[in-house]
Length: 468
Image (cartoon, rainbow, N blue to C red; front, side, top):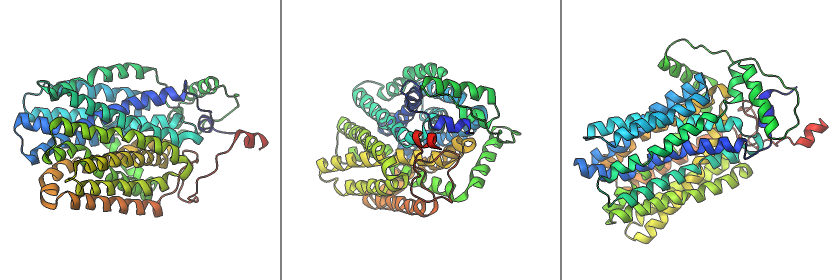
């Protein structure tokens, strides 16, 4: 007899069922992108208002990204303890509160503190959103669904760029940029109340009756013929200690589960996101330093973000056909190479803008596939915290990237050498992934191990199950 989680993963995709969860989860992810992308536009404007040096300007993005690193750990752990649904809603509420307070900041110290706290709230969106969407998605389309989730990123980043560009002539422009995000975030908080708890999570927590209610409802709403199933025994978990004790315990369990897989997840996140956040946080400032006007610099950066939508569309088309590892291995180094090319073409503005557009596209091919891949590598009881710790490791390191980029790397090494060194880190991470971690395409969640071949497992069809 099959288990409840196998039933869920073999259901047909329906936009009115799993699609609703994908849309609601994706909108939360959109706000994460909007907020991160906004750092690049806030940096020159806040720097001018508060009279910051080039090195100090890096603190604008650093405070927010470090807050997100803390939030990714805290909320990934909380989601594995209290459930996806509660964490799903609370993260946005915290973000909205501290964002509106940040818009009222009277000085740079208060601004940085509030941006950090807003980051703590929003930092939980990615691990929580990916956990709940992956656990509702059918196995045969899970790669495409999780890759499509990242389509919300360039949408959010583009909205940040468009709003920033339009608000440049307005007095107090950076304050209005922060305020603009609040009402949609609160609306989404209200909508999220209708999302059910993950049945895989309920099963792992021993809440069998609740899990059966959700599973039976999914079966009925997708028009699938009901069949008997069993709910596996709950996973034993030590819940003693406070939040930080829980986080440390989850970190220990994430590494104990499989050190090689966790090392691959962390190295991919750190290398790829280091390149992406460095470009995202400083691109408007780099272009302004090359003589672009403020509106032109903002618009060019917005173009980079907008072309990411094309990248995500490509990732959705190739992720299941060619496998997660192959797409990451090709798109990651190519994205890094386009940044090096951009730095060499700065003397020719048109070609430079084309190059950063290409970077925006290739970066958003590799990132959604990487997110889907890492979220699949961990079992249900560790999925949110495993993804959260990988995300946090990258945010903790990339959080200091804007500061180091503005005070050391760019002034001392120059842009071509800086982007070349960052690209070599991506190549190293890709090679490590290729030899140390399995392919996950087409395999059942919680049954992906390192002792299986790298070729994607064939998805069992309904006809094959009938014959069996």
